[in-house]
Image (cartoon, rainbow, N blue to C red; front, side, top):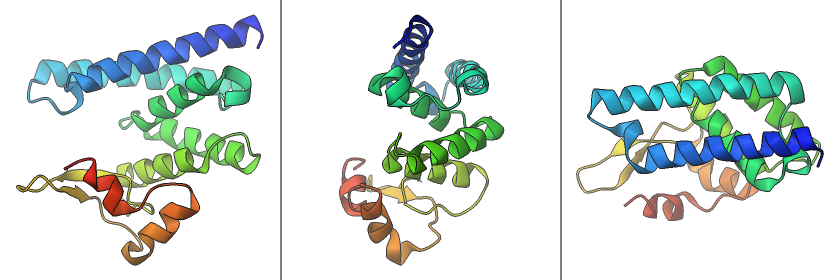
Length: 169
């Protein structure tokens, strides 16, 4: 990996670490407006930077920037919820990378669902959770084909829906 790509990998992993710290602290779903604003600013800054990276480098694949940095780029795209054009563009580039065998179909499935939900449409793989019931069980966003969710998930390497949501309970 050349020096520029090594620096990019370092930057992406640092952005994902900052994202993880904020998410773990509960900033994304906080009742505190200041924490919500800080989360929005962080994810917007990261989304803006990811857009610049995509302009310059295309999708940052594991082959180019390493596995951790590639996953970091995916996480940044996932959390660019208020930057739908960034998500859509990341989705297109990730689709191309998956088609070329340079990225994981699993990550593409999560980003596709996230983008569909942000567009107000039904998701495909049941990866996005809308909220929690009083009993603590998760409520997924609506799915286009709920009867096929596990089949579709299996096709991209995602565990069955019941196993996935068991982690949320």
